[in-house]
Image (cartoon, rainbow, N blue to C red; front, top):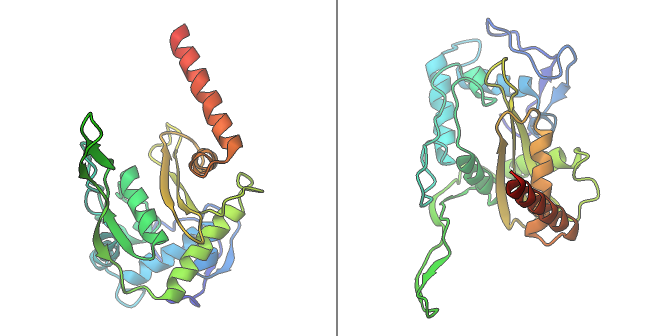
Length: 268
């Protein structure tokens, strides 16, 4: 696809046997390009992408689609650990059903910190880093013994400037369309997600992004296990971004929550 490619969303994708639906079903999004599909979280647009990666109607092949999806996922570091200095599980890329895997379903299983590195790579237009939890180690007298910094492991150079613009604009529009960030002083780009695990338990709430979107200084990934819809993770992100950039309202809220948790712990 390119930035002008359009797929029509009627609310359901009929080209595979399970006919997966968009979240808006029984409605539809109509014609979507990649920017509007990101903004609207249009499943059908990305079902089409996964379907075409697998060869489309002329030569559909599940294994081919998965191979192509995972080629790009690997570029963003989603198939390996991030390098932080604590025990870390690797993310798992999908092994089947490329149409579903294209929206993050199938048997994808991503760590939260892996998604944060992914968001960082989008914010920097293709710089993929191994991460560190440490800034430096110093002696008790204050002498700096060792410094740490992220290590650049890959630069994605196959994505054009126009393509990055299309993706980043869609992520900015995601945030602009949320009530949570209305009137917020920092411009943020992000992508919501809801990971369904079981009909017997609430879904997991997800939100990844970076800020400021026009000159990024931070990237984040927030996962609330069984946190229902993504709006809850979006609300948490606002307080984190606000604290990072010194927004007093967010700092006051965080301090209030911390005080409440401390008093609850003492009471228990």
